[in-house]
Length: 327
Image 1 (cartoon, rainbow, N blue to C red):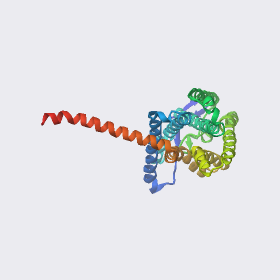
Image 2 (cartoon, helix red, strand yellow):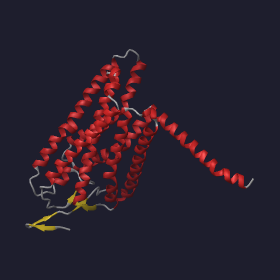
Image 3 (tube, helix red, strand yellow):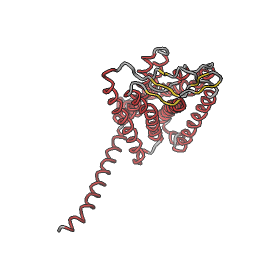
Image 4 (cartoon, helix red, strand yellow):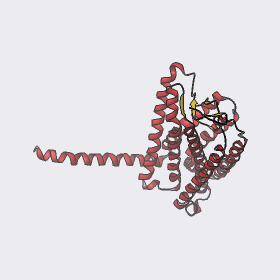
């Protein structure tokens, strides 16, 4: 399990404790989380399929929504399957390399979510506050370039973490009191000075979290002032409805992150909050967007009607030879 180099026993395997106090409720929570995971995958895939198949939804806002759904699928798939294994067996081991890969994928999806929510708020700002020039500023080529830029930023962020973490020695203990490999629990296993990677993480918080959050706040301040200037109540409600789903997702996502920073040393609370934004938030996104978005509901009904019609046609084609045979 361990290798010995220069009298230091290096960690090659990690044991995740998960949730140790579930006792008789372990099976119930396992089934509940499994159900949430399946619903998350199906809900986000459904949004991607509906948007992709409906020409009326081929707009920047819904393009970014499909990217957000992809991010939620990637996040929950990175965390939940292994967490279910940890929960079912009251703790589970994984390779140290696998632990680092899980951490890198986790920070990649979190950064992707932050930046996507930011560009979606900028999209709503342009649509509401600058409608005459919206199509000339926000178009599909702009969206594709921005997604490419996001992944480029994420690549360099992970590269910096990888280079720094590769310089450290991890000599144990090999137990993490968490259900996935987050930064702080992983760094606690190091017998090296980890101040550099902590400084790096604090620096990266500025362009990945603080700056995007500031852009979102400023965008919605302008949006709110623009909405208040609309004379009719119906007009204000209709305009606000175009960004209400995004605002709800932003409040849930950043509210959880802020709470984590408010309770940095309380492991029990951090586990619950981590469970919220790695398991609950990814399923809330498709629910919020699908229930409150009229365009998506209409596109979904059209897709279902088309699928039903196609099924009936194929069924009749299959039955026709039988009808001729037994006539």
